[in-house]
Length: 242
Image 1 (cartoon, rainbow, N blue to C red):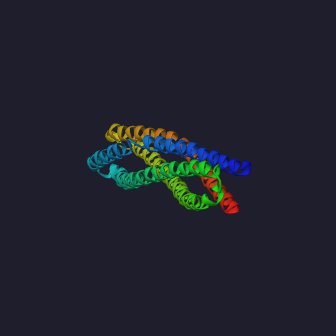
Image 2: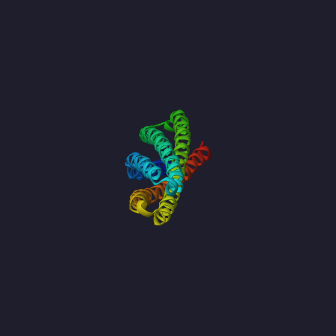
Image 3: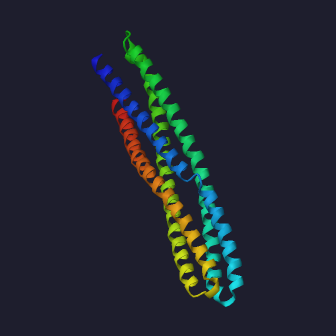
């Protein structure tokens, strides 16, 4: 009886750890998605800036050829940001769906644990609880699979964050090159320099997004891997004790 109670208590502690980390993981994911909340607005601002810069380059004639090419490249980056934003929107939906499944599974696991504890305390309780333990193991298997999916979703979120970082780096280079072209643009220097300065402002805003999101994604990645290990350990214990 003591051994059975200890096993049940161990399972309860483990599911409690999973629930705590899952809640923390969801909080980190929310922080990351919130950090990128204005990404579509910034992408639109960059698009409008590139259009205005292209018009200015057209007015500058030969002195605006390089700037015109740079603005076309900027629009490619804007399209990339729009693509990333769409991917993040889809990823947010799947992440919250995984979280909901995890929390629901944990609630069911806790119910199974409490039921088995009550049954084990009765005469012939061990035999009667065997079917409940099998159901518990099946549910734990589903939970582990969901934890894997959640960890993979966090990995995808990390990739999207790095993709935004690449866009920021390239946008910063474009702003620098436009500033260089402005120095040789004569009467059009002020207009080109305004474009460069405005683009740097948007780049700084994007960097701030990345700084906030990267910390949340790093924490989420750590929790995701920890959850995966805890789930696998729990499943191994169930198989050993079955």
